Every structure is written in C-alpha cells, then in structure tokens.
Length: 370
Ligand code: SF4
Figure 1 (cartoon, rainbow, N blue to C red):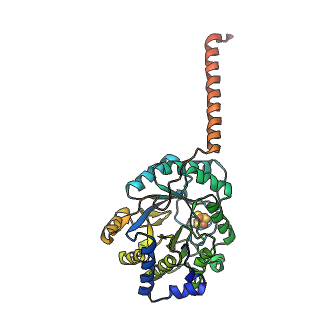
Figure 2: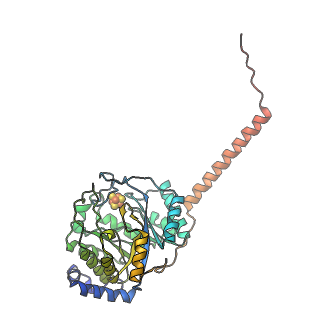
Figure 3: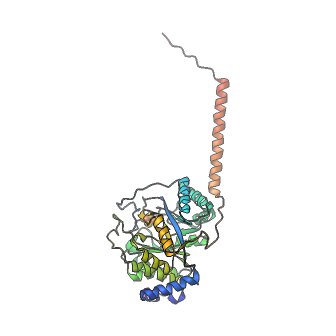
C-alpha cells in the first residue's frame, strides 16, 4: 500500500491533520509499525558540495545570490574532500550522504563530471548516495544512476497554490519533470516540503495531494520546518509550533505508509520530547552533523545521546533497496583517454626535444664588437 486511499482527498487529509493530537499519533504509530521497524532511524548527512551564488529566488534560501546573507559561497568541492567528509560521516553512524549543490540545474560540464566521480566514490564506501543538484534531464539522471546514485532529492516545497508566493524563477511543473526524470532512470525519489513559510494548513495538505496524485509517490518524504535566515524574504517568519511538525509527520506517515518520512531541517528548535513524538509518529530518518547545507543542526554527539535515551538504532545502508553498481562513465572514460593521449604526446615531444637538443646542440657564436 503505497498510498492510503482512505485519505486521497484534500478534505480527508485536512480532517486527519486536525484530529486530536494523540489519536493522530496513535494512528500514525500503528501504521508505522505495520510497514517499518519503529526502532530504526536512518542517520543521513547533508553536505553542501557547492555553496551559494544560486541564480534562483527560493524565498527561504540563504544560498540565492540575490539575497544578502552570511553564507560564504564556495565553488565545487574536490572529489577527495567529499570522500574524506563521507568517511567521517560514515564513522559517525551515517548510512546516507546527501550532496547538495546550489545550482539552478545540472549542466553537462566538468563540474558534473566531478559530481559523477563523487557519486562513484561514495557509493564504493558502501553508503547510500543522494544528490540534490536542481533540475536535471533524463540523460543526466541516467548518468547519475549509472554512477551508483541511490536517491535524488527534489522538493516540491509546498502546494501548487502557494508555490508562487515563495519561488518565481522556476515553476511547479519543472519540479515535477525533474522528479519524473529521476524516477524514469530508476533512482529512488526523495521529495518533500517546508512548513512555516506562511502557508495555510490547506497548503500543507495540498503538498501531500501532489504526491498522492503521482503514479508512484516518493520513496522518501522529507518534512522540514523553515529555518528563517536573516537576509532572505522569509526572515521574519515566526518558528512553527512543535505540534505542527508532529502533526505533519504523522499525517504524511498515514497517507504514505511505505515511504520513509524524514525529519529534516528545523530540529534545533525542537525538544528531544517533540522529536521523540515525531519518531513515534513515523519519522524514520534524521540528518546528522552540525550543518544542514548552511543552516545549524544538532551535533553528532547530541543525536547519539538522543538515540541512546530513546532506544533507537541507526538504520543500515541499503535496507530499503540494493546497493547500485557503479559503472564506468563513458564521458569521463573518453575524457581520461584523451587526457592520457595528450599527456603521452607531450611527453614524447618533450623527450624528442631533449634528445635532439643533446645531439644537435651547437652553441651560437656571438661576436661582441669592441
Ligand atoms: S533552494 Fe536550491 S535552487 Fe533554490 S535558491 Fe537555494 S540553492 Fe538555489
């Protein structure tokens, strides 16, 4: 049961969301136990591989170039430093690494080739690799899939009705297309939203309805609470009540029984008790590490302590699907072949010049007139 047909209308979802809280949590916990191990919670790490300077205008995002925020922009990280960070995340218990680049869309260039190598290398470490790189076409999705990408994250953020209040530089349809391209390539889809952006509860349910209407709902649905960052258009938004996060997690859990509901941004504002209720209500994953792209997140140690207190177990990688095989990438192979041929040519030319130089070199006579 991928979607719960009992709640396939916005009205039914609204009624569910507004149920007495403890009944809602109980219903969610019951469904969660039927489809998932309630003690298992996946620890995922989110790494910003390219930060800031994004041409888009997402109203919540400090990485948009047009907003004046404290984010330090940096260009694409090297493959080596990503691997180092991945090893570190794995040693701290993460079984998934999500790599985020502040791009409008994927471009077929050297940077994308490097991302392909990052995917291959992190998959080789035995971690689930997820990317969030903006819009992508079918060919790019296939390259990522062949490199060993496990999941692609592309959030719808909110309902189609509220979307234009938050973003104007790309439309809802563009997002749906990218999700479709990931799905067609056989990549697990991770797509969710943000609450607390000034939207009505109807919009939260409108977001869930967008997933209800898909042929296949996302395998993962991250639920984020807005982290209002100074300098962004949403800087003045008041933090949401913890109850709203619990309600949203529980409603999502009930509506999509098989998806992994990911308790994502905004945990720093939540007490351990509120997070415990989210786990009870079906959250099956958190982001670990002190940063979520550019916004603060609880430290690894705090999360370890929380897991111990609540009796949670970090979920192993590939519990929900086989590890993809990383295949050689034809474009990178071709480039390497060309680079090797060029290097060989240069070395031969250099050797020739040196050899000729030794045999034929006769110093030029210089006459200095006095
Ligand atoms: S959310 Fe992504 S696409 Fe939107 S501004 Fe931020 S980095 Fe760019």
